[in-house]
Length: 234
Image (cartoon, rainbow, N blue to C red; front, side, top):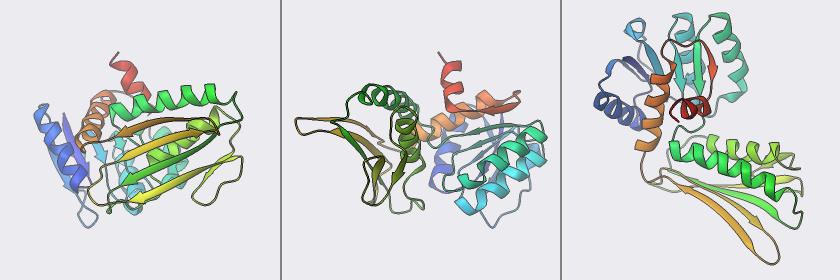
């Protein structure tokens, strides 16, 4: 499989390492100021760029019939436009706020716990996410996905970074050097506390999942999620 890496920072370099170990070839390594030369030779593109580059990267891929795996966060106000473009071009697309296999298991656990806890109004929920200082968006895309999972399975209406009302989920977003990513969901009452947590030890878990997603996307058409990738590996 020939891969175009759109974004060649720390994550891009780890994705390259994993991809090469799995026998794939890198035909393009692009940063914001680079060109797309070599893109048309790719079987699939993996985008871990900056929020202000993601839409251009994804659009260019669809316009050149290149499937896209995107793990860039902070641009999702344009997500539906990219889905529409993918459909118009008969393309293939996976966006994930987090490609770590462990985090995607954590998403499922979060959804299940939210369904259970929705029956017990004495518990309030809040979240904490911690990332490295280079993380540009806050809260993280993973934290937003976790909050959406709770909202879809409970009476909570939205998330906030400020002091929360009773129908809001407070997200405490912290930036600390050399932290790949830690996410915690806490249900608290006067008598006890229930907590679930995912701690990433390195970027390799994210990179491995992104390469798996790229492998999954070959010869497919449509818009998929990491859940589709995980189900294909049952």
